[in-house]
Length: 97
Picture 1 (cartoon, rainbow, N blue to C red):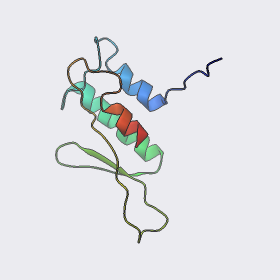
Picture 2: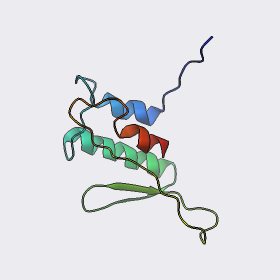
Picture 3: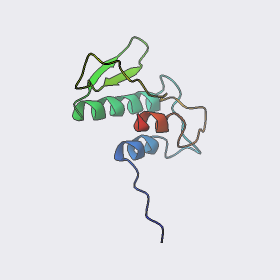
Picture 4: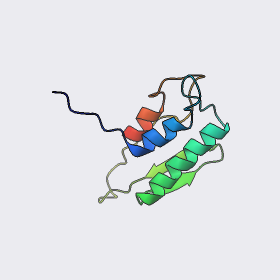
């Protein structure tokens, strides 16, 4: 018997922004991209992450470590997609991070 897959609520919410399209459409600076970036920021704030946005609209969410003298670990991805991109296009790397 297979265990049902649980999908992260933030992942589902961002995928829903392109629900009327053939695929995922979050081209840079479009309303879907802005809405997805906003949802990501809000989720980061709820999770007590340090949030900032640079002059280009890139979102940075930081979780400070307990030992600040150690080097940082960075991971992430891109929120934008190609036209009619797949569900995992960029978003999987963001949610995974």
